[in-house]
Image (cartoon, rainbow, N blue to C red; front, side):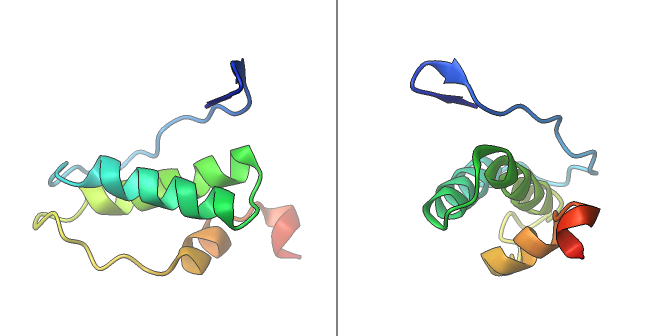
Length: 83
């Protein structure tokens, strides 16, 4: 991820069984924007967006029942954040 011309975050993708890619980019981008607007730093926002995108591609109907943003924030929290 780049901001103002410099790299601010980079993460690997999540290994997931792909059922359908329709809408996955939209889900990823929406989650990224929401995470950033809610004050998450670049790396955490990217982690959350990756998790949402992974859930999106795993649904064969291309219309997964995604959880609210808070679910993904909690699910991707590093162990130190969970204490």
